[in-house]
Length: 239
Image (cartoon, rainbow, N blue to C red):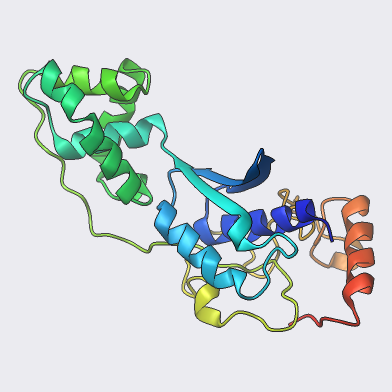
């Protein structure tokens, strides 16, 4: 198994845990794990470290991964609204570090505020072009000043659950695989895989021949997975 195959496994597992797209790719000199908004860096990295002890993504070990979370323009605007209007443009510049820290420490920011605050954040994002300094300057000029927004009750650090990856021998304990009480969207089959078990691409809703749920996005992925199972069969067994 190549390290690039391990990166695809990491991407599948971490995306399902985070419920946002997590990409894992080679960016010299290391493998970079990147996503936007979603869980905090500490939450996702901590879970990956725990899962790494069960050879997730081997031969690409957790120790070779570097985690980088980015913030959308809406997340930046929400951080400013949580702080409230600065006293002046000069104060706004000084508060950028505070806003950046809020973004880094707040997982799933779009779930932490009420609907009115989300609408205001989207408007600020458009007016400030998502730029952290411009959004702060806009709030500094607001008349009357914008009061600090209240956060809603904190939710889970990770909102998803790993359901599509076939674990080798020595499966992780259940609590590391995510929440067991996730709501199921109407019309969604909780057993049917949503992503290709080989490459992680989204699957169509159509099943394979015989009415069975599709596991792979293409014949190439199905063949590659079949060959990989036969190469590893003497060493591992599926859970």
